[in-house]
Image (spheres, rainbow, N blue to C red):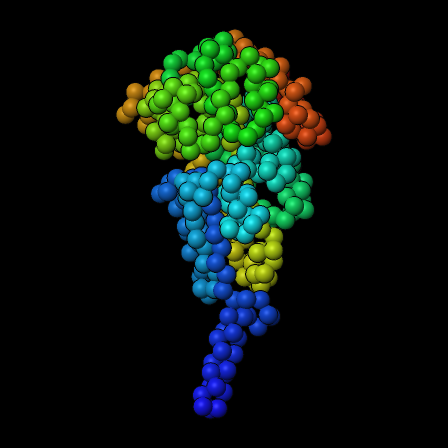
Length: 345
């Protein structure tokens, strides 16, 4: 009996040692990553490849489990799950990232401040280091940034002029009271809903219009109840993959470096696919599903109407949604880019 107890203790000790790396860090980690990206979409597949690379780089000691399609809730819920360690990482847009730190809103919540994606790239490259520091101070490490190109308005009936949108019930993210107030100030009729309720809201008439990137309109079949799209570059949809700092810090340095390389590769794929698939999605919805696209000529009178309406909200957005210092820096960087490229007007 004594010999059996000794063997049992030795076995337990061996199992404990096998679960710990030489530097005392637990060798096996299960990392749960959540995202709104639909299952099977290119974003999801890039994250899956990243997970495979993480497993290989760690010798099988890191298992990445991906929860796509918002099955763990909307982005606010995703952040809450990370805070209580039910999830350890998330691919978030600015909607979720602002739950961690509001400064990220400067890349997404200033409608029509960017005229081109090149302007966005210029501003983002210079602003992201500060944003990463702010997120790190809140306990999150940014593994990569990305965007999906432009957000457009999809609607049940045609929207061409701002007055057309005023007559409709416009979706806005649930829980963002200040956004609702600004929409109201702009003469719109916002209806807050969870992202998962957009399609049903359109089908039932609870909402009439929704701003979203075309790839998501295609993936979620929003084009069926909302067969009209205004081709106005309203705002980019910007996001980042974040992981909890305490989780990231438990990974040995040599492994962590390899994981970061794999993450940056996935980020590059998602960044490129997000922009390319936006145009492809519009073409698919037009040719196969009879989406009606209402064009907006850059620099034309119609765009000027929308720009005037957008810029009228800036005093409320500055300090109300986007921190004033970030708002001012975005404006400064946009102007800097335009002057350097000869596009100041």
